[in-house]
Image 1 (cartoon, rainbow, N blue to C red):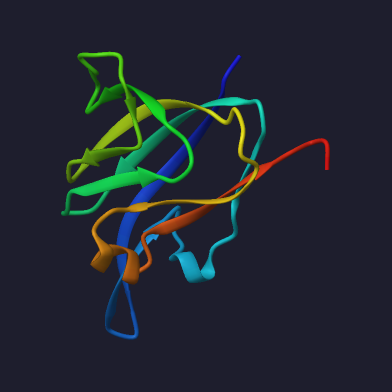
Image 2 (image 1 turned 45 degrees about the vertical axis):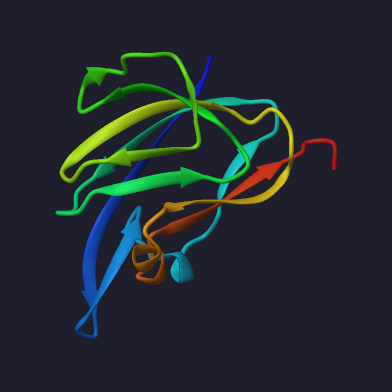
Length: 127
């Protein structure tokens, strides 16, 4: 019963400057990804760039399903996984507690500065 979500990492340039995006937008032009407290989602993240991106989710742990269509070898809780260039990964995340605004971003700070970050808004249906 888990919802699915697709995220695409890409690169472009704006006014001659390199920009990294999630779903076509750098963080400063994006809107938050809304998720609901108590739900589980399967995220597929596609890396269309020529760079590896160690992707990090604040506030929550996830379990890898596969990377580059190869099953993840062990069941373990992660908050950061390297996504090699031109590949994809799938993971399951349960938004069990801690409503509020969180970040999903590349852990290479230069890549964050170039826009590769998304805000994740965990909505508590009680409020």
